[in-house]
Image 1 (tube, protein in one colour):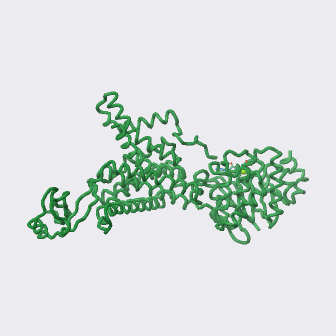
Image 2 (cartoon, chains in turn purple, brown):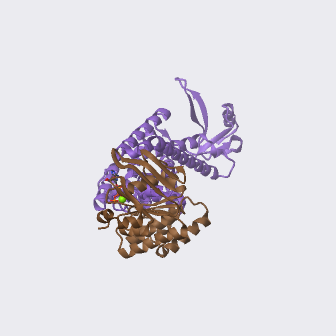
Image 3 (spheres, helix red, strand yellow):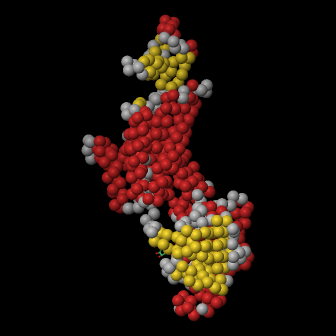
Length: 366
Length: 234
Ligand SMILES: Nc1ncnc2c1ncn2[C@@H]1O[C@H](COP(=O)(O)OP(=O)(O)OP(=O)(O)O)[C@@H](O)[C@H]1O
Ligand SMILES: [Mg+2]
């Protein structure tokens, strides 16, 4: 029981960590709290959603579960890539022009970009939540025989009274049905020679995935920041932009790259998030974005390991503290208060350690 | 090699340099002396492209560079060791030096530069893996100069290398500056408040007051000039 909550917390925390990285990297280099970062995450989640729903990568002729893994692999890369490019574009058109106008102007711009992206998402994709597309395993009708092992579906297009074309899944064979000649014929009559079963991802498998993904990404980021020429340039520019320019470092390039990497990893979190919560919607970036920002502050904003640790701590705190309050102290409503608990936790950390766990003491720039 | 003609520079609406003209010939050590707030740092920041002149011309090796971006100017052979050292305290000594060679893509050339800088400042080699922030002030100054030398500059701009450093280390650093000119053939524009040391090292000098050049002469002549002695040599 406790272990389950711990895993929940780590899974959630890994998602926070993936988002918090972008906040902390961008803050580190231009001292901007990028309020639109949650929207990069949201757009990444939509891209992942459309890949999973429409690309039909599950159809590739490989033994299971490879097609499903490939499906997610492609969705993750697409989500990350688009989120990264959106971040670069946003930086170029919205943030760079105000970079010298002071921090308040930049912050307001970020809030504006955040609202703008939310609104665009509502206009383009609609305000209604869409449910997460479960991966599918396709079967040729001819390959199936005997008693059905699962529910089998096929997609049918039909036109609504408003004239919209909608795709709808039709249940053709229920689990346990015997697929005899009449049933087969009736399905073929409806025009289907192929059916699919849906694979429901267990929350556990998503948790394991996102935790493993974080474990995989941490050394990659470490290498990127510590060992590569660009990573060193990034650290140099975040400490002293003018001195970095004197080295020949192109600050604009470094800033763009930082935005790209930060949003790229947020894309991973985006796909994991919609797989965990089962839906995607335009406002999806708001709360996780805010909490990831909290995580970045807890870890010490500007610090990359801080973002990872802060994310994990916040996720675990959000899962464990209500659990303890409920089980040990008998407070039945503890789980309803989990968001408030997360923010209370932030306040406690900041009172005890104002710079966050791994943050450096504030240095006034001369 | 470097010529500034009638350069005006502003901070917002405040004019910091008033029609400043100086020149530095190849192989020279030229010093710019003056009291607090005279505009020495502003002059160097304008040459290295951190600030843009609003009027006047800056040419380097016959090419107009006024207002070009800093990262382009360093590529043309001007390195700037800024006031207050401005080393990267979170990076190791070695990484600081690597940043100095940021534009050198040839690995063996960068390695050669590193060896050269380690020869000039052996302490940096001893402390290569230490983070820059843990160095003493004098060592940080060596690192700032070494970092600037990594790009194999034709012209080296030095802003107050003696600032806040023990006299014995200052002497060591000035010896290295002399050595850089002699052995690397690097031309040097040195800004100093320590006018005595600067003039003893330099070939020529300029005296700057509130953004204007008020004297220029051979270094030895400035050292003997009674007005200069009174104002800057105590
Ligand atoms: N960031 C700034 N904003 C506004 N004014 C500035 C700024 N930096 C310098 N100034 C002004 O420009 C003038 C020249 O300053 P500068 O730093 O070039 O002097 P300096 O000769 O290097 O002095 P010091 O010996 O103290 O380093 C001064 O009047 C100073 O107050
Ligand atoms: Mg100065």
